Length: 263
Image (cartoon, rainbow, N blue to C red; front, side, top):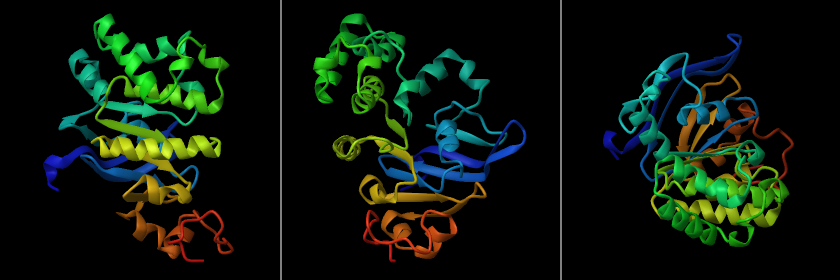
């Protein structure tokens, strides 16, 4: 793959919360068209912060971020045309679905993005119906999001993003706090979306899901720097690396871990 295949490019980015707490320290990353990429590392290493940079929710203190060949800054996103183009091409699914759902009904929630992209209402209604059917939640259309279970909320949050048909999907801890059936459903959905040509970036510390969810891993250390970047099966097989970044500990046993992680 060449430079033209790099959809998202992070160059030497650092970010600090409250001018005191480092979240990212000189991080560089290239996200290639059509790949499934996992950002892995212990809690607090900067995975979620990096996802928010990729979504244009946070802006680097130093370094720069380019998406689809355009530099993304707070000032540049004040341009309505650039902002609309960027927002329509990148979708973010938060770890906590309650942070994402705000409309009176599920139908309104899914329609919000298309309508704000100036899609005609009739076309938006078709898009909503198609998305509801695709995710198997048509019967929830007139329910209020607060009335739903955790798994149902996750489906609605994903539907709201998919209704805008973005090229890139960002997932923050996608399998966290979900029941096993919903975890399996979401894993299969992410793989299907990848097969359909979507570019997937997900942040997780759940090693058991990485081998299925991602083909490539970027590992962030507790010093908020990138310490490894490679094929998922190579990263999962490097016990010394996983120990060093606090993703496993000396007495980890095999239950629940990918088989490639030696114990």
